[in-house]
Structure formats: structure tokens, C-alpha cells
Length: 244
Image 1 (cartoon, rainbow, N blue to C red):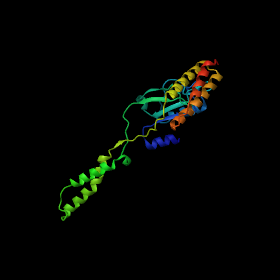
Image 2: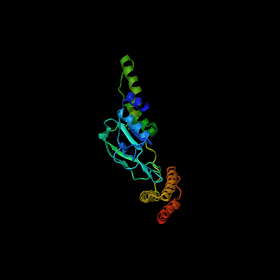
Image 3: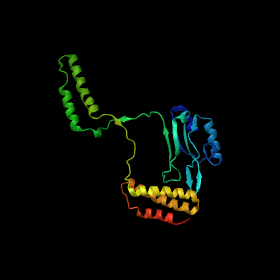
Image 4: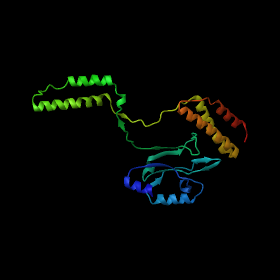
């Protein structure tokens, strides 16, 4: 109810990634539960629709494959969503990455960053602007007012010139990705596919352990404290050797 009330008040176009823990055949689950029935009832009475496409499982834990992650959007957004799917990239969690393309233009927020301004260039630009100022008779009221306005606007105009608007970068700093991490990522993906085929509890236990170690290595790399991951690569090799 809070979601519906907020949407009705704001009236903006929204896209929501929702870990619903609800099952319903409407979004590709294998069966329905009470939570799923309640969610479908809510969506039928709102201006929000399901953007999921296909029945690829979004959740995998211990051999259990299910669709419980839902992408919701404002009514009419479905036509703007293309290439919706579950990525094969290891997500380090029991839930897979949801990827899709939203067609249409997206507004870009532009800002000025004073810390990125070259103070030397700013001083030179300000000095040049003041020297090129109009020669007015400051003894007259009109000339004095115009000169005051020119002096007031000179720093602002110089600042805008030397510190132009740039797109706001909200992304996190990229981690230190290495060939070892890339090899481990690919190996984890192959192990996941093997576990899906075998569907044996012991295979899933091995996958969970390798994924936990991989997650730790990625976390260490994101802190720029990359540690040797030979032991994890060795574990992957053992997983392929051992026939579960």
C-alpha cells in the first residue's frame, strides 16, 4: 500500500528491481504461493506492471532453481524494455544479475567541480576580463552602477568559463581486475553450469564454497589489496577432477 500511495502522489515513471520471495506462474515460477497470489492481486489494482520476460531462474541455492526476482515498472514501460534476461555472470549471491535495456533518453545531471578548477588559469582569466571592462564614467550614477555590476559578474563569468559543466559521475571506482580474477570468474561460471546439469547436493556445496572464496577475492581487489588467489584456482581444478 505504501508503494501504491507513493506512486500515486509522485506520478513519476519508475523501474523497480524486487526480490519478492513470491512465486507465481505469471512471472515464470514453477508454482504459486500465498505471497505470489497477494502480489498479483496488488499489481492488478495498481498502475505497475511486470517487466520479466521468459522463465529463466533468477534464484539458485542448493540445487533449487526458481523465479522470485521481479522487475516492475510504470504502466506502459513494457514496450520500452528490451533484452530482459538473467545474466550468466556469477553474481556472488544466490540471485542472478538481471539485465535489460531501457529505450529512450535519460536526463544527464551536469555539475561544476570547483576542486577541478585551475586557480592560476582562473586568476589570469579574471584579470584579463577586468582589464577588458568597459570604460565608464564612475562619477555618474549610471556609469557607477554599470561598473559595479561588471565587477560583480566578472568572477562569476570567469568561474563558469574555467569550470565548465560536466556530467555527474555516480559510479564506484573500478576494482583492480586481473587475469587471475578473470580466470576464476570464468571457472565459477563453468562450475555453476556443471552443478545445474548434475544437480547433486555435494556439487552445490562445492560451488557455494568456491563462490564464497571468489566473493572474498573480489572484495579484497575492490579495496586495492589484491591477494594471491592460487588456492582458489586450485580449488576450482579439484572441483572438476572430483566426480560428484
